[in-house]
Image 1 (cartoon, rainbow, N blue to C red):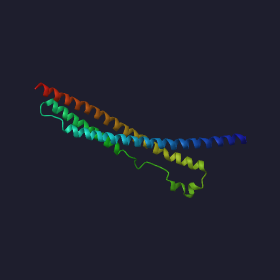
Image 2 (cartoon, rainbow, N blue to C red):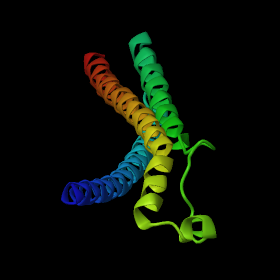
Image 3 (cartoon, helix red, strand yellow):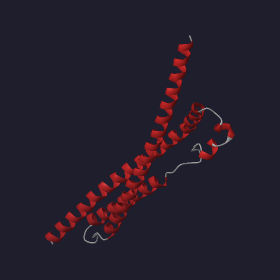
Image 4 (cartoon, one colour):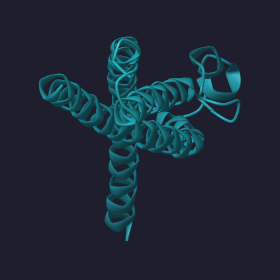
Length: 171
Protein backbone atom coordinates (compact mmCIF):
# COMPACT_ATOMS: atom_id res chain seq x y z
CA UNK A 1 0.00 0.00 0.00
CA UNK A 2 2.89 2.35 0.77
CA UNK A 3 4.35 1.88 -2.74
CA UNK A 4 0.99 2.83 -4.28
CA UNK A 5 0.86 6.07 -2.25
CA UNK A 6 4.37 6.98 -3.37
CA UNK A 7 3.37 6.37 -7.00
CA UNK A 8 0.31 8.61 -6.61
CA UNK A 9 2.39 11.38 -5.04
CA UNK A 10 4.98 11.04 -7.77
CA UNK A 11 2.26 11.25 -10.46
CA UNK A 12 0.71 14.27 -8.78
CA UNK A 13 4.05 16.06 -8.62
CA UNK A 14 4.76 15.23 -12.26
CA UNK A 15 1.30 16.44 -13.29
CA UNK A 16 1.70 19.68 -11.36
CA UNK A 17 5.08 20.23 -13.03
CA UNK A 18 3.57 19.44 -16.43
CA UNK A 19 0.64 21.83 -15.88
CA UNK A 20 2.98 24.55 -14.60
CA UNK A 21 5.35 24.29 -17.58
CA UNK A 22 2.45 24.12 -20.02
CA UNK A 23 0.78 27.18 -18.47
CA UNK A 24 4.05 29.11 -18.53
CA UNK A 25 4.70 28.24 -22.18
CA UNK A 26 1.08 28.88 -23.17
CA UNK A 27 1.12 32.36 -21.61
CA UNK A 28 4.42 33.14 -23.31
CA UNK A 29 3.01 32.03 -26.69
CA UNK A 30 -0.19 34.03 -26.20
CA UNK A 31 1.76 37.18 -25.35
CA UNK A 32 3.94 36.65 -28.41
CA UNK A 33 0.86 36.20 -30.59
CA UNK A 34 -0.64 39.44 -29.24
CA UNK A 35 2.64 41.28 -29.88
CA UNK A 36 2.83 39.98 -33.48
CA UNK A 37 -0.75 41.09 -34.07
CA UNK A 38 0.21 44.55 -32.81
CA UNK A 39 3.08 44.71 -35.31
CA UNK A 40 0.81 43.67 -38.17
CA UNK A 41 -1.89 46.12 -37.10
CA UNK A 42 0.73 48.88 -37.02
CA UNK A 43 1.81 47.99 -40.55
CA UNK A 44 -1.77 48.09 -41.83
CA UNK A 45 -2.34 51.36 -40.03
CA UNK A 46 0.59 52.78 -41.99
CA UNK A 47 -0.62 51.26 -45.28
CA UNK A 48 -4.08 52.67 -44.66
CA UNK A 49 -2.57 56.10 -44.01
CA UNK A 50 -0.59 55.98 -47.24
CA UNK A 51 -3.60 54.84 -49.22
CA UNK A 52 -5.67 57.63 -47.68
CA UNK A 53 -2.97 60.15 -48.62
CA UNK A 54 -2.73 58.91 -52.24
CA UNK A 55 -6.50 58.56 -52.49
CA UNK A 56 -6.82 62.24 -51.72
CA UNK A 57 -4.95 63.00 -54.97
CA UNK A 58 -7.20 60.84 -57.16
CA UNK A 59 -8.97 62.70 -59.96
CA UNK A 60 -12.67 63.26 -59.42
CA UNK A 61 -13.69 66.20 -61.59
CA UNK A 62 -14.32 64.59 -65.00
CA UNK A 63 -17.07 62.16 -64.11
CA UNK A 64 -19.40 61.14 -61.30
CA UNK A 65 -17.81 57.66 -61.47
CA UNK A 66 -14.40 59.13 -60.65
CA UNK A 67 -15.92 61.02 -57.73
CA UNK A 68 -17.65 57.87 -56.42
CA UNK A 69 -14.46 55.81 -56.66
CA UNK A 70 -12.45 58.53 -54.91
CA UNK A 71 -14.99 58.66 -52.09
CA UNK A 72 -14.92 54.85 -51.90
CA UNK A 73 -11.12 54.78 -51.64
CA UNK A 74 -11.10 57.46 -48.94
CA UNK A 75 -13.94 55.88 -46.97
CA UNK A 76 -12.46 52.38 -47.05
CA UNK A 77 -8.97 53.74 -46.32
CA UNK A 78 -10.40 55.51 -43.28
CA UNK A 79 -12.18 52.33 -42.18
CA UNK A 80 -8.94 50.35 -42.54
CA UNK A 81 -7.15 52.90 -40.37
CA UNK A 82 -9.97 52.86 -37.81
CA UNK A 83 -9.98 49.05 -37.51
CA UNK A 84 -6.18 48.95 -37.14
CA UNK A 85 -6.24 51.68 -34.49
CA UNK A 86 -9.06 49.94 -32.62
CA UNK A 87 -7.08 46.69 -32.67
CA UNK A 88 -4.00 48.45 -31.33
CA UNK A 89 -6.08 49.95 -28.54
CA UNK A 90 -6.98 46.47 -27.22
CA UNK A 91 -4.92 46.01 -24.10
CA UNK A 92 -5.03 44.12 -20.85
CA UNK A 93 -7.73 45.20 -18.44
CA UNK A 94 -7.67 45.48 -14.70
CA UNK A 95 -8.96 41.88 -14.44
CA UNK A 96 -5.57 40.58 -15.53
CA UNK A 97 -4.05 38.63 -12.68
CA UNK A 98 -0.42 37.64 -12.41
CA UNK A 99 1.51 36.44 -9.40
CA UNK A 100 4.17 39.03 -8.75
CA UNK A 101 7.63 37.79 -7.80
CA UNK A 102 7.52 39.87 -4.61
CA UNK A 103 4.38 37.98 -3.55
CA UNK A 104 6.22 34.68 -3.87
CA UNK A 105 8.89 35.95 -1.48
CA UNK A 106 6.34 36.56 1.31
CA UNK A 107 6.35 34.05 4.17
CA UNK A 108 2.97 32.68 3.10
CA UNK A 109 4.38 31.29 -0.15
CA UNK A 110 8.10 31.23 0.55
CA UNK A 111 7.74 28.54 3.20
CA UNK A 112 5.27 26.45 1.18
CA UNK A 113 6.35 23.42 -0.77
CA UNK A 114 7.12 24.08 -4.43
CA UNK A 115 4.17 22.08 -5.85
CA UNK A 116 1.70 24.10 -3.76
CA UNK A 117 3.16 27.38 -4.98
CA UNK A 118 3.08 26.16 -8.57
CA UNK A 119 -0.61 25.30 -8.14
CA UNK A 120 -1.30 28.83 -6.88
CA UNK A 121 0.49 30.28 -9.91
CA UNK A 122 -1.40 28.00 -12.33
CA UNK A 123 -4.77 28.88 -10.79
CA UNK A 124 -3.98 32.58 -10.80
CA UNK A 125 -3.09 32.50 -14.49
CA UNK A 126 -6.50 31.10 -15.51
CA UNK A 127 -8.05 34.56 -15.85
CA UNK A 128 -4.94 35.84 -17.61
CA UNK A 129 -5.21 33.10 -20.22
CA UNK A 130 -8.90 33.86 -20.78
CA UNK A 131 -8.26 37.58 -21.11
CA UNK A 132 -5.36 37.08 -23.49
CA UNK A 133 -7.57 34.88 -25.66
CA UNK A 134 -10.19 37.65 -25.85
CA UNK A 135 -7.57 40.27 -26.67
CA UNK A 136 -6.08 38.11 -29.43
CA UNK A 137 -9.55 37.44 -30.80
CA UNK A 138 -10.33 41.17 -30.94
CA UNK A 139 -6.98 42.03 -32.50
CA UNK A 140 -7.42 39.28 -35.12
CA UNK A 141 -10.92 40.53 -35.93
CA UNK A 142 -9.66 44.10 -36.34
CA UNK A 143 -6.70 43.00 -38.46
CA UNK A 144 -8.92 40.97 -40.77
CA UNK A 145 -11.39 43.85 -41.19
CA UNK A 146 -8.54 46.28 -41.82
CA UNK A 147 -7.08 43.98 -44.49
CA UNK A 148 -10.45 43.57 -46.20
CA UNK A 149 -11.05 47.34 -46.26
CA UNK A 150 -7.55 47.92 -47.60
CA UNK A 151 -7.90 45.33 -50.37
CA UNK A 152 -11.26 46.70 -51.52
CA UNK A 153 -9.90 50.23 -51.35
CA UNK A 154 -6.93 49.26 -53.54
CA UNK A 155 -9.28 47.65 -56.07
CA UNK A 156 -11.39 50.80 -56.20
CA UNK A 157 -8.19 52.86 -56.48
CA UNK A 158 -7.23 50.81 -59.53
CA UNK A 159 -10.73 51.22 -60.97
CA UNK A 160 -10.40 54.98 -60.60
CA UNK A 161 -7.11 54.91 -62.49
CA UNK A 162 -8.59 52.80 -65.29
CA UNK A 163 -11.67 55.01 -65.53
CA UNK A 164 -9.53 58.13 -65.63
CA UNK A 165 -7.35 56.64 -68.37
CA UNK A 166 -10.39 55.59 -70.39
CA UNK A 167 -12.03 59.01 -70.00
CA UNK A 168 -8.84 60.82 -71.04
CA UNK A 169 -8.35 58.50 -74.02
CA UNK A 170 -11.97 58.83 -75.09
CA UNK A 171 -12.03 62.62 -75.07
